[in-house]
Image 1 (tube, rainbow, N blue to C red):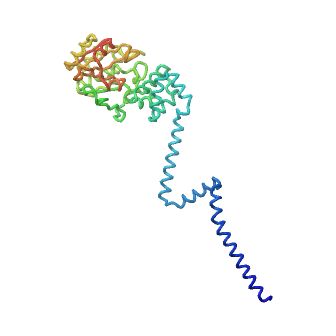
Image 2: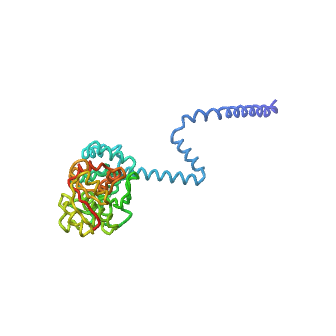
Image 3: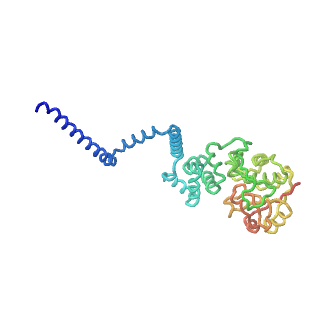
Length: 344
């Protein structure tokens, strides 16, 4: 009987082992399916890292590059400031510009990083007085093309002299396909080549409409680019036509004409006079009264007529105004004087 015990023990052992195997097989299937739903987040992250480590190196490298780029993008956004979360910035804009103008700039800030920086740094434009601060921020709101000039204004103004860097040029042959081109070039006072210089005790970008208007007439009628708006501004200042805090004396338009190879005479601002002079190939510098186009006075060029008798305007302050044609009667109504030019 004792000699058969080992056999029984062996049989019992085999049975026990078999039962354990069966239990392991059963619970080995059930347990993971339940515990997976309760797996801690740290374990999930660790598993993900292990999986990532098993991926091919090329994919890992690409993912790392995307992650780094995204991090840089977020850091840049944090440095610029977000108008979405900065009530202070929005309040400052509204306080300075009013609801309508502030809304224009905020709208542009959603897609334009320079506009976002401007809107988030209103105080950066206060160093030259509240009037300049208001005008330059309003320019950014009204004229999207002027945003690069406004963005760099705190760092670059005042600039001692103009620069000849073509990369800074407002290269606009015609601001709209719907407006016919003329020999008169489109030049802007806030072109970054000369806009940061001082004229009439402020930035040329805000005060230089007179010299820029005369520069357009000079370049167009003489078919040359050898005198820029800054060059005309220097002439105006040297001859006493620059008025401190008040732009340009309109006498400049007639008095400087002979030195610029031009004949100039004054005409009464009347719709028939505008049509007649422009039809003869002459060019007009309009002296605008406060009204639709300006609050305190402005100059721009009447460069020609369309086939249907509308006036082509080269406005040195506004791409928007230059991108449409105008009724000659309306231009006459808004004008105080007209200076008519022909090649001498």
